[in-house]
Length: 220
Image (tube, rainbow, N blue to C red; front, top):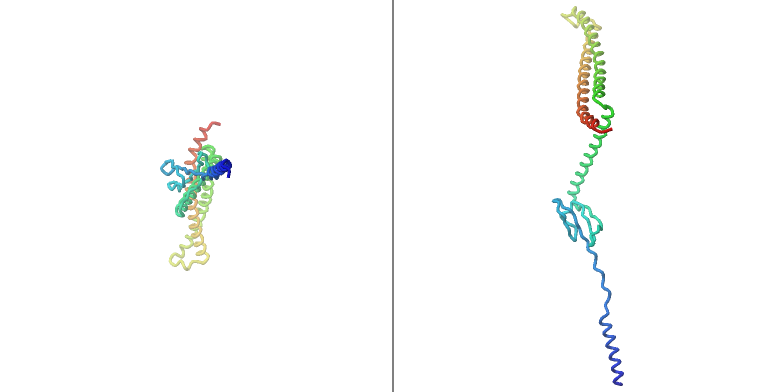
C-alpha cells in the first residue's frame, strides 16, 4: 500500500478511536435529600436527614435542600401513647365546652339580672311565693288542731277503754292525726325550699358580682 495512503488511514482510525474514548453517557441526577426539623420537648431545635426520634410525639417539618417547606409529618406514637394523647385531647375539649357553657350561662345571668336590685327583687318574690304556701299550710294546721281538740274531748269519755269509742269517732281522730302529720312534712319541705332558694341566689350573687363589675367598667 502506498505509504501516504497508510498514513491517512492511520490518522482516521486514531481520530475515531479518540472520539469513542471521550464519549460519555449522561449522568443521572442524584436523588433530592429531605431535611427534617422540629422543636423537641426541651425546646431545642433539631435537624436531621431522617425522621427525628426525639420529636416522634409532635409534628415535624420537612424541608427541601433550598430551605423551603416540602411538607409535614404528624406524631408517630405507640398505641398506648396515642391512647394517652386521645384522652388528653378529650379532656381538653370537655374543658373548653365547660368554659363555653359557663360563658353562655354568665351572659344569660347578666341579661336576667343587670344589677343587684333586680337580683334581690327576684329573690324576695321567690321567697314570698313560698311564704304564701306556708301560711296556707299553717292555717290548715290550726284548723286541724281545733278539730283534734274537739275529738279529744269526745274521746275522753272513753279514756278507760278507747276501743269502746264509736268507729266514726275513731276514724275521724285517725284522719286528723294523719292530716297533721302530712302538713308537718309539707311545712318541713317548704323550709327546705326556702333554704334552696337562698342558696341558689347566694351562688348566683357570687357569680354576678364580678360580672356587674366588668359590665360597669366596660365603656358604652
